[in-house]
Image 1 (spheres, chains in turn orange, purple):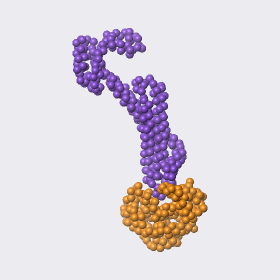
Image 2 (cartoon, one colour):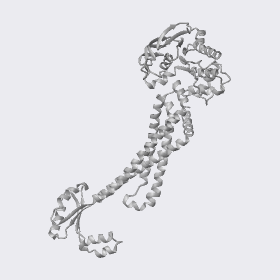
Image 3 (spheres, one colour):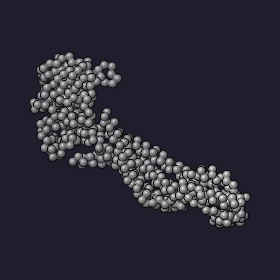
Image 4 (cartoon, one colour):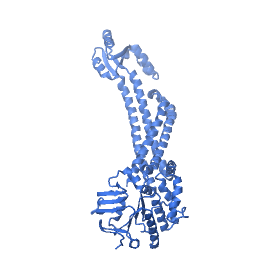
Length: 226
Length: 291
């Protein structure tokens, strides 16, 4: 499903690589935490998987497609198979919860009829039934992140990437979001989550890949934060 | 559905940034008016050249002490000259008649001039008006010839002035065009910035580049096309009020500016306006989105 082969990423003007010859393989349906201190290179992995950056050396394979040398016009279509959630939610403030999710469908060419059928369903799934017409500023942080998860999942992606999704949330709300991600994982969606929230990692007991100084220092099934 | 989305985005985009939109349209309009004017002028000058060149004559002036034999021999060699299309002789009296017509407002000048003061000449039309130099070397040293004058050299001066005017209009068009270009680029950047959240989400969920860019590009093209329509209006107005109005006296020199020449500018200006602003918008946005 996801394969990094000896991937090195050095940003321009950087003294040392963010990722240094990293190899890791993730199977379909896996739930993986990437953990490590700030600047360890874990966010670079998300960027590589989304093809926001290309590796300096090595190969990145996502959904059987070699992302490292993908032509730029193929990127949009490639990204439709990946859902993404961020620490800062990235919702459109002038649109309601429903419209935020529908927007993601609309801009990839889905009809309004499809949106009317699918969006209420996915909002129900993330536990926002009845709050479809609230604007982001009328929702709590946890609810906003649920909208973001709904938007990431509405297209039924094969992979869900989550970059510090609980970073802006209190512990209780964080756990609710994790339950939601767990539920999505159970539908067969591969979930890759970057975090430094030890509490969450310890409770979930899923595969943990620890990165330090651009290298993998631990890869443990059912691991803890350490 | 997508068309509706794109169109509504274009309209809100234009309205949100209405001052910039107007600035964009005005610079576009001025630039395209200049372009249109210089194109019309180019057309006119071309037409003038062909009519004038066909009527242009070379005058071979006869010196006052020339003998009748010399005059006849000049006439004979002109008749047998392969460069000459036609030639005619103008004697003192004919020259005087012409002179009186040209100086009808200056009776004093006519009073002191006699027919004998005015030189006799051969009026020669050339098969190829550019071959003046050959004629000049051949005839200027012939006995009885005073000097050889080419009207084309006089016309050249007129054409030079007109050409300079035309170049000026073109330079202004380019300078204004550059300003319009920068304004379009800036407006598109501002528009893209004000919609950066939408653009980020669209990129994230995999909207095609075409889909992300088209509202912005159409916004720019819209301004370009409106600018072109205003420029066309400007050309029509200058035809009505200047060429056919206060500058009508000049039409003898410049030739008539036909309506068809003006109407031809419409498609040219619209295409130029749409293309320039559209491509600028697209390139600007491409750089912006790649970031």
